[in-house]
Length: 141
Image (tube, rainbow, N blue to C red; front, side, top):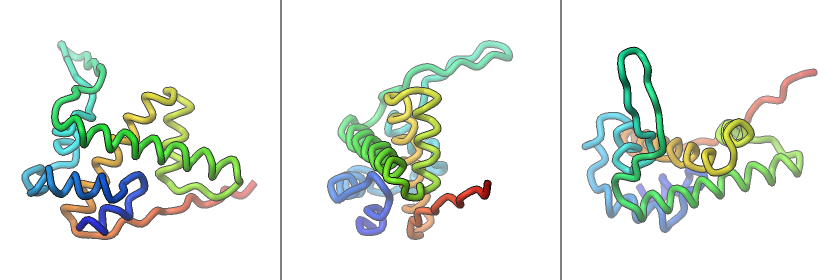
C-alpha cells in the first residue's frame, strides 16, 4: 500500500508510512470527506436558516499528518508552477491547483490541495487502485 500511495503527487515515503501507521483501517471512513475531516482539512461550517457559512479549517485530528499533507500540497503547487514556466503540459491536479491559487491565493490553495490529496489518498486506499496523473488536453486555438 505504501508504494501505491507514493505514486500520488505530494505523497512521499514519509507521508505514506505515517498515514499507514496512523490510520490503520481506512474502511472506518465511509466517505472521503470524513477522512479529510478526520485530518482537520475541511472548513468549519455554521448554518442558520438557508444560509451556510464556511470558515477556516477545523484543525482536528493528527497535527503531524496534516503538516505532511500540507507540505506535499506545497510541492504540488511548486511543481505546477515550474511545469507552467517550462511550457510542459500540466496534469489535471496541477491545473486545478493553479486555478485555485490564482483565485484564492497561495495559502488557501495549499490547504485546498492538501484536502484534495487526502481525498485522493482515501480513494486509492479504499478502492485498491493505482493513481494515474491525467494530463490536460491542449485546447485547439
